[in-house]
Image 1 (cartoon, one colour):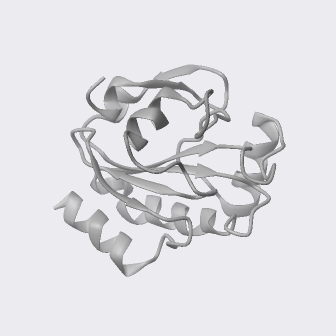
Image 2 (image 1 turned 90 degrees about the horizontal axis):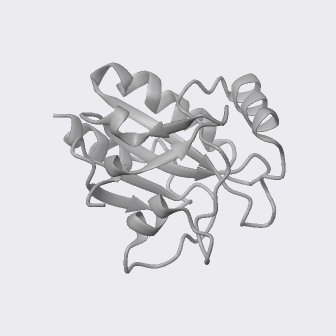
Image 3 (image 1 turned 120 degrees about the vertical axis):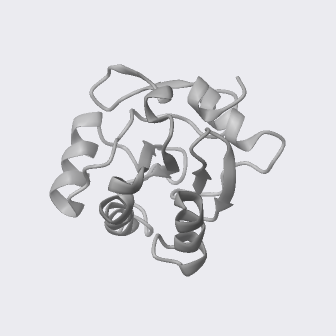
Length: 156
């Protein structure tokens, strides 16, 4: 596996999805949680999706329950919460583990030899060829100028 596009993951509806379907798009991959202090970032993530989606950008959300058990719900509960509370329309995937021995292969690739995921809402910006451009901490809000600038540069 040499790019993010080589992986697959289960969508929230349980169907397996090849990430190659996002080839040619700039991606923001985020591990998410519904009961976290950073949960309001869903609103900003959806705003990024609406602002840049037509230019070839997509947020991909991967719910994770590894940090303070802040994503305890079922796939259906998570989707309902995100859509009804924050109007989320970007792709949501099934819950995964992002650290430890059961880490999803996508996150093994994203992290490589780097540090483990520190908390919910850590972000990886991926170019249109499936390569990691940048990694942003959970504290980096979706409207942070550095993140927005990196997205815009990737789309130009």
